[in-house]
Amino acid sequence: MAPLSASILLLSTSATAFTTSNVYRSERVGRRIATTTTTLGVLEKPRSIIAEILDRPARTTTTIDPPSSTIDDEEHAQIDWNNRDEIIGVVREKIGGISEDRVMYPEMNSGEVPRMFSNLQYQHETCEETGANRITSATHNTGSTLGAAALIAGTTIGAGVLALPAATAPTGFIPSSGALFLAWMYMGASALLIAELSMNRIADTGRPGVGLLDMQRTFLGENQAKLGAGAYFFLHYVVMVAYVAQGGANLGMALDSFSGIELPGGANQLLFTGAIGSAIYFTRPSFMEKLNNALVLSVLASFVGLVSQGLPSVDFAALIAPEHQDPTTVINTFPIIFLSLVYHNVVPTIVTQLEGDKNKIRTAIIGGSFVPLLMFLTWNAVILGNVYGMPGVNAEMIASGSFDPIALLQQSSAGDGALLSVSNLVGTFSELAVITSMIGFVYGVLDALTDLFNLPSEGPEYEKWKPALFGATLLPPLALSAANPDIFLSALDYGGAFGVSTLFLVLPPLMVWKLRYEDEERKLATLPLLPGGKVSLGGLWKIAGTLILEQGADKLGLLDWVHNRWMEVSGLLA
Image (cartoon, rainbow, N blue to C red):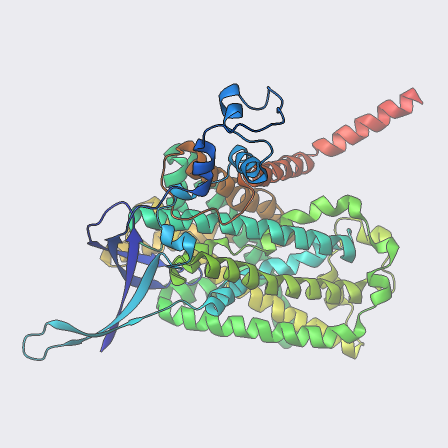
């Protein structure tokens, strides 16, 4: 008996059934699942209430004339400005509200059918006489909202959290906690947009499991999609540089602590990369999936131990002291915070698992990302609360820009039993988080390279190019991290400021804008998952674009140059 997965998909564009097959990959661990999709037709939907209201003839009632510059005379004559519902309908249209008559599946809007398709699990057996396969039973493999939320939480908890204390220490716990909450809302909004794109792409193609790069090519076009591909590779390579640097440093500290062996510069990074690369190269993806799951559980266990050991020694008075809060620097924390909250590469997988059920998808995204938010707030409190109260730590040291609370905590633990326990747990958590994140990113780059060069993901042709693919994946980050072993924080900062902001904050609103408004006759798979219409979309990408420009000017030194010139001019005028 062997399982076979299938999905039944409802489309309104045709009443003809057809079958297609697709293989989609989990970007976290490179898992490949065979999926068969069957497509059926449904009836057209009725006209929406809003459309009926706007087409209603003018009424003989006393009206309040709106400004002529806002609405033309013809539209003005058809609107009763004393009717609240009618005014709301006009406002919705102006800000980009989507009418229900554009939705392919009216049953989903009414709640009659909550999902786009159904995942069916077939059991089949082989006939001993003929060797033919025969289906014996079929069951509905319904997606678990809790399981989808857990996948999002596990993807979010990565090595980016290691840079949070260093990024937020100059700003302080209170302002940075507010920034974390705002960034969580922002990243959640972006994830809902990606889910909306994924649902529409499934409706267009009749197959689940469509990835981010495919959606960029579809909704942006080949030329503009190159920006997304560039941001994808930039983010993955920059973050892998950081992971190799930190993973090698942690490995070197462990070797020195347990055996007294101190390797020369760059050797620790080479050893770390060789171990991770060899494990992925010589083992099956199924084994790496099991190993990765075990490591994720170890990450969670070490985090719980770290919090339980570190909370009693937190100096809460120093943590919230006014001298340790500087809201003026909060914008500099966002690149690392955004990077720490990334889980968007698994959103298309979540959409497939939950069968396009928008309520389940929204619950999984919000709930699954809220757990890491609480963990990050607790992590920041434990690390900063233990460091702020240390002897010799002052405001000048914290604001220097090179202050690393985790490194200071590990160096200052000698002779202090409580701090020594916290320091050991920090080191364990750090190394495990780097390893799990590194595995996911290696698979992500390998999959992207095979797509870029039109290579298969398995088979003889893949085996032929496998050494070159692994070399292209691992050698660039190894070379950069070995040349600069202290590049961890700055690499993550660049990845968050330019890679994450472009890939997950600028492009999704632009793609959704094209989907909804470029062709207003186009049928949509669902009403918007994110409310606000054009206002929310424009606000999202404009804020992200502003952050990119500000961080670019800051890293090029333009802001410091302008500040210095302004001070010179002010001095001359005084």
